[in-house]
Image (tube, rainbow, N blue to C red):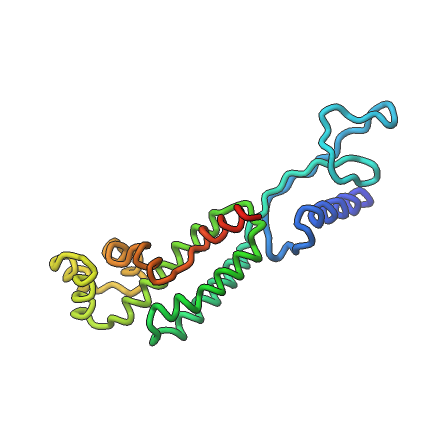
Length: 205
């Protein structure tokens, strides 16, 4: 029992040192804690041991990758969903402008993350969400056909896509909407990328 209590105290101390005081609710990751065996002669350092935090005079080596916790991602997505529901009657430029400070502040808080896959997936999810809003705003199949043609799709494909009978979220992830509303089109309207903002902060830090 005493050994388990001591091990828990050791893990908590290492976690505080590595995260700079951040809480486990915001970051998640894998860690390994190793305590080298004591040497026969007191005061002699074990060859190959990694210098770092010491607990009860025993050096500890740690390995951990910080990543954004799943619950933090879900909270952000819930906030963006609520904003998108509120913004169904807005122009897309206005919604993108409203999203910019949210993205900037969220990335500034999680810039210590060492795993960037969460930011890649957030970018993909947000772009699909914006395309879904446009598809809903176009409402009627004939309007959708005309909009797709105006955005560069050939008439036959625009007609088949507009009358496919599938829902907005499916169409937002389909190839015809990705071709009509590419990343460059969204960036010209001011859309900020989670990954680009994260990498910019990493370069300047």
